[in-house]
Length: 236
Image 1 (tube, rainbow, N blue to C red):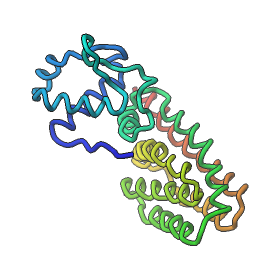
Image 2: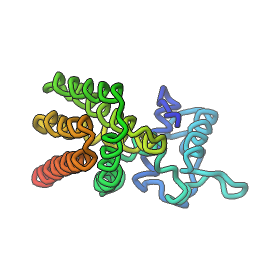
Image 3: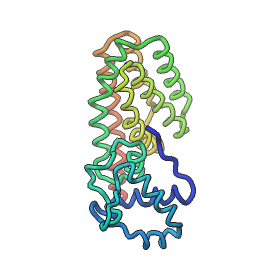
Image 4: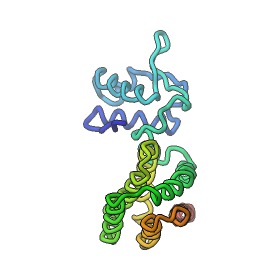
């Protein structure tokens, strides 16, 4: 699925409108005042229409004769679209989104680790080892740590040799990237041992141990987020 790249005035218009819809500032069913938006954003009608086409392609808005352009019900939105996911996670547009992500990961990734233990090739193991090496080398560099973590989970899904599971990277990576940026910016501790335990079990072709190790890794991930959220609540 191709990701929309926000550039210039057009990109900014898409981003602002998306955030207003996701946060409810433009509620479901509401009709957009095109003239007012054009004046507010100081853009041409062509730019505004192009921005709305991007959102329409993601199921967020629609246009009908006599009704105009309106926000579609949330049930119609392409929630697994990479941009819609990114927009939601980037500003936590919906409470509980990280909890939903954790539930999905808890269902998918332990099973994926078990399959990887049965199917991983030497090339798959090399990719996992490379991700571990990058993770160890990242140190306190939050950006490098995020990239290494994403590479690890991408390699894990690839090692299942299941095309449908590999497509889950769109959901897992988008949410995981936002979660990692938040957590790694506050010193989550050394992530290598927990990830290495998963790789060791995969290398040993031990499906149950791989699934268990991934389960423990995910438990630590949710603990890290919960700790940060609790600290943020105390500061308010």
